[in-house]
Length: 640
Image (cartoon, rainbow, N blue to C red; front, side, top):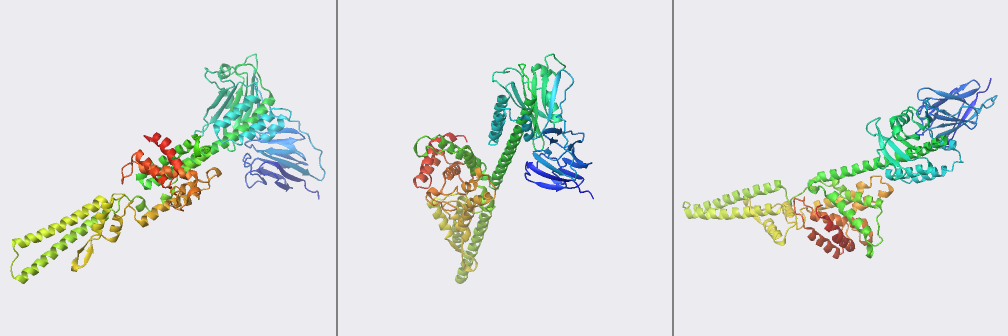
């Protein structure tokens, strides 16, 4: 029995580097779908990309109309298989390599009687329009193959390698575009104009100019920018790089090419992992220079690098926008639970960043040399916006408490006082009736006058006590004289039914009304103060990037004081980072000057600054930072 031919697949480059499989079957499928015989994880590979089929004594590779095509290398000859409408194929031999996406697969074919290696004579397909204007095209291929085709003798490869390395360190689209434009004009001296058109991210099929840049700032300065839509549309439809060449004899060409005086144009698709991002082009408008086929290959490499960098930048931008939305949604959720503090987080973030920027501008004194980088400012801003995040874990009754006792409790006190009046009247009349019975006489007008006067005085005393409760229950802080008035009420008792002494106020009412500062009792205050620790705890559950990893720590420590009297940990001195000291100052200042608090009027900015300076003098706040805030930041906050 004749032994079967064996094919060994080895991935020599790409995401699955080193992967190997041996096959002796008639048909071997290749692609990203898990049901393929040789499955790849490469994002540029189609689900069912290609297949190797035994035919006669050897194998034939078929590209199954894949998205990016296949490149087959046979004895140093490259054969491009890319056709979205037809399945294309080529016979392979031992040692052949197949490029699919960014993955290069080497084939080792062994058979009982090895056939001599065949040598393919095919070349990459070129097409022309048949007229005086010519289009040379090249299908989209992975970067590795483009550079192989260019050859090592082209000194411009160094520009591409340097560009690739520098692009990897950038995430801002503006910086990426500047670098791509600079590299393009350096690599293509004949180019006089650069443009990128991008696909609309919301409306499918819509392509619009994204950036246009002449080689010189004065070139085409007063002219309307013209782009050849015919060339761009061809690239979009075929996803092939195009070298357009217009000869000097003239031809039937589009108005845009004629008006822009384009003699030659390089145009390449910007192909991302999942879709076409746009089109990049350079042309020789304004003078008669030309491009070569090697320029087309080089430009295609440049476009591949640009597409990768732009897609990564877009992803970073999307992540940033998503995170900004998350932060804003979190702030909204926090403040919706306590509408009286709406806007607090945004203002604190503004004050915090302004103080940090003032520090950056300081060139003398202890703050000289203290510089916050842009990423550190971003981290600090997010910490300021989310510093009250833990309030989502505070009881709503505590968070929204605007008075020492509620309206319901005041109504109950009023009902209790009305009952006291009735009991007092009944007790006084029973006492008078007993006296009249003993004396054996009816009540006189004088008896009734004494009874009414005593009840009037008792009732007025209770009414005055109720007015005091109503007046003081909404105050945040009480003066010593006001506390004495509450103590006088809370310590008084009256005779109830059966002569049992009953206090005017229940213990909870009394305890809440006599609080000197704030309207929260000790239990409620502990629940409110827990928000700082909860902020750190909740925020620690988010997988922050390295640049934002200190957000939970900064947010959770914004109530710490330098003398150790703060909370939740009682940190002191150097245990408190500069960023936290800045945030604490901003938080206190806004709490003092906010005009949206129902329990107190907004404090004048000068008075608030005095309080900050007083706390700094006590060693609770950073004196240097407070002075900088009062001198440079607070005066500029008028109207905010």
